[in-house]
Image (tube, rainbow, N blue to C red):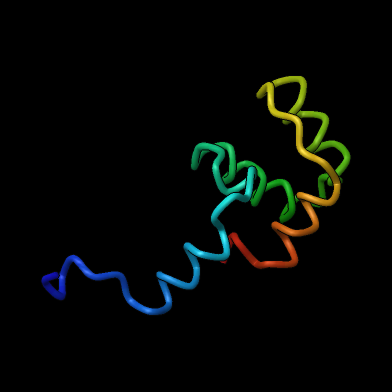
Amino acid sequence: MANKDRLSLVDFVRAKKRAGCPICELPADIRGEMVEARRKKITRAEVMEWLEKAVGVTVTPTQMDLHYSGRHDQ
C-alpha cells in the first residue's frame, strides 16, 4: 500500500471509535447543524425531537451520550 493511500494512526483510531455510531453515520450537513445547536445552547431533547420529526432518524439518549462523550465531532 502506498503511503498516500494509508490511513494515519490517528485517523485509523478515530474511524474505529466512530464505527457503528448512528450519529456519525448521519450526513455531514445534519451533523453540522447538531454542532451549531450545541453552540447556540439548543437542548439535546430538542435536537433529538428534530432528528425524529424533521430528519426521520430516531436516536436514544444513550447514543447521544456515547457520541458526545467519545468526542466524535472532534
